[in-house]
Amino acid sequence: MAGLSDLELRRELQALGFQPGPITDTTRDVYRNKLRRLRGEARLRGEERLREEARPRSQERRARPEAGRRLERCLSRLLFWASLGLLLVFLGILWVKMGKPSAPQEAEDNMKLLPVECEKKTDEFCQAKQKAALLELLHELYNFLAVQAGNFECGNPEKLKSKCIPVMEAQEYIANVTGSSSTKFEAALTWILSSNKDVGIWLKGEDPSELVTTVDKVVCLESARPRMGVGCRLSRALLTAVTNVLIFFWCLAFLWGLLILLKYRWRKLEEEEQAMYEMVKKIIDVVQDHYVDWEQDMERYPYVGILHVRDTLIPPQSRRRMKRVWDRAVEFLASNESRIQTESHRVAGEDMLVWRWTKPSSFSDSER
Picture (cartoon, rainbow, N blue to C red):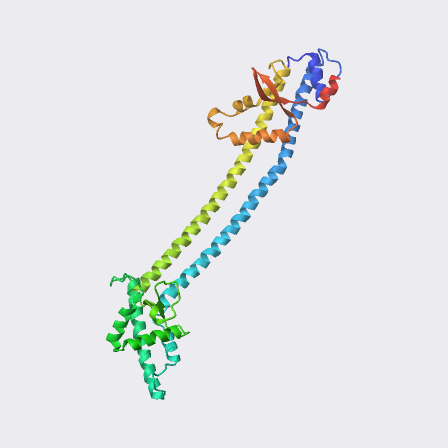
């Protein structure tokens, strides 16, 4: 400041809104001190203006974590209720697997409720005997198919190809156990086909997806309720329960991981925005100091290259990491800082974007 001439000192004071009197040897130091104070006040006003411009963004930044915290609370509650619901589902599955009877009495009751026609007799005794014979045949058939299906699902020790037992194999077993003829066996199958009740036996044809309507199309018989031992039933229930628990924990871990990722992302955005405001403040100081040096003939041009400012403020090893912060700071200055003007100049034979510090309008008025 001691290198300023009287004319430059007067212009500086007028640019800052102060009209000096005559500058003499006795008043020169007073006006220099006045200029120093005015410059300090102008810088403080600029910083205050920057803070006021940044305040809405700060409020938005504070509102963003608040929204994140609300989302975090909602996700925590959702995870709690999901955990409770899945626990109840797990207990329900375990109870159903352990408590389901292997051969429910309902099937036998359904058998007893349906009438059986006598072949050629209509007396009550005949009907009772025919009904008892058919009931015994169906009961033996039901037990045989249930045991075979249970063995198939519990390790298949008999090396069965399927739970669906061929009709000839089932007929031979019934003939050996009950001594019933093939006619009685076919009558039992006909009764199953014509019945609207669930007796726990499925009749299947060549195509399992097609519905069988006649006895001659029946290929195999399958139990609807496999009969399994306590150990097999317990192991299957535990396997189902463990599978569901693993699925539940994987879902829970995914949701917790998503929540942690969101919290990490919000924290990084806050840190990046704070770093952006710090970078804006440094850029303003560099551009203003460069302009002051130019006024004192310490710099050749009144403007400074944008990339030169970046290289001055950010070390080479940090430029890749700070690229997003720098780009946001440049965008913020272009839209929110009127004291820095972005221009394009030809420097060293190449077009380059530069920043120029602009003085208040009172400077141009004093020039007139």
